[in-house]
Image (cartoon, rainbow, N blue to C red; front, side, top):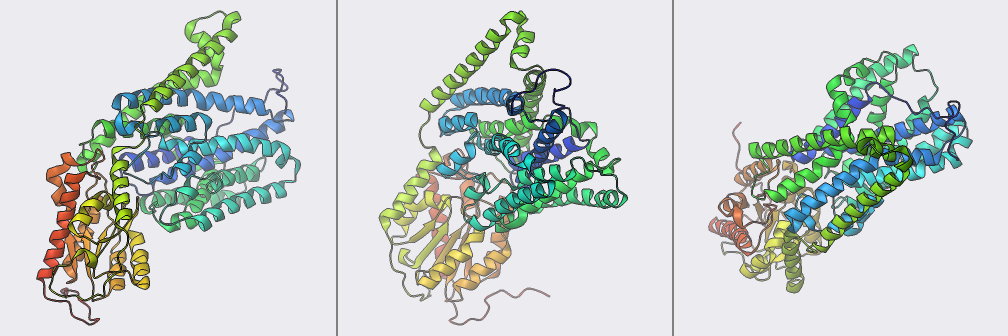
Length: 616
């Protein structure tokens, strides 16, 4: 555990490169960037983080075991110093620049900024986000440094895993190493599957304990292949097929596996980790075709800069969104905004890689400072300490200034909290019996189920429909509606008219709408509220809701999207939530839908299907 001497016979050999691994990194960072910068385009792009976890687990374990094989020991101080050189310079530059930019942008960009900076520098962001109740998939209230949650998970791994290796792993047989690491991976994946709350996956997604199986699977691969020949005919033939299939599988999951699906946490992300390990294993085979494909210069260029690209892309996008609040996030305008953010990200990451990351990684902190400032070697230590102090003070100063400017809650949070309080103040009213007729439904006949948009409209809904029962929650999505409706039906609280407004936070499936309509039965009426949000899935959501409402007699569409277009300037900066004016217009669309239902002939009191016949 002591640092090795600097003689050639004891210096650890840390030079280690796998052809094609930079291409895997490029794939990982590309999926995450597309997922964030063009929302709705790649619904499973978040899985790039899990690919990174497997790569990190494999590389770190391999480097540590190779060091022990080379010099007979593992220098923990040397390992942690190398990690600090690799990660801290780019991170501190990012925090300084983006926090200063947030001070300029002001308002919502500063909400929780002090806690975010503290989490970033202590590598505890994931746990702080869990404590704050934030969610990775919440589009309405994005934290400036939300993406640093994964860096926190990796840093916690870098701190604990080498200790475990030194104290336990290197002292036990290979088969027991594999069994132990495999057990850790299975335990983590199982914990995610068991503990996940389908309505809010924050805890299992951000938690180190429930989301470390990728790191463990990477470590398992390192132990499995280290020192073992990879040129056997059967192995080469198998991996020659399995490797490309694994990469294709990762691409398919990035396209089709949404973050709001329970299956994502009950095996989906674990499958991503396994496929990533298979893809890496295929690169280790001599003469691997996949390695040659993934080692092409453009992919290597992106892979080498993947750390900086990952760091910068999200804060840049958030700052642009706050700086351009009326810029649409959908259609060609959405692609243009993502393109601007990508261009800034590439420039920032390239500059960081060339002038910050590489010099410090190669030379160390003090030698880099000497090379830049041309200071004599005898003053090198003092200079390094001084520069470190200056950077620390600058970061602390900017962080404190930002924290002091934190408004405490953003515009959107204030709107949502007002709606939540309005619901609490209204209390609960017993549901009347379902007695459909031609009269316009009153508030005590309406159940409204929604997300944070409905929370924003709650005071206006209560004013227009006294006695309305509102069940709304932040980040709720359409897939949760059947369970909510069924629960209210079972306890007798479901009313004659059911309003569902859950199209904001993700794509929807027609089968979900069918289930809702089946549950409410033929004696109730359903109003579906379409969505206004600068998100790529909104056109598809609204088209699905419109087509569904056209088919059934007891289903009506409340067209909030069209009603919102003339008043976009009255909406909050996220172009999703709203104040009193937007709440009034939102409520008016529901009122119009209620009136249209009352104008139709009464519903038949039987279970006959109410669908309009479709042509053969």
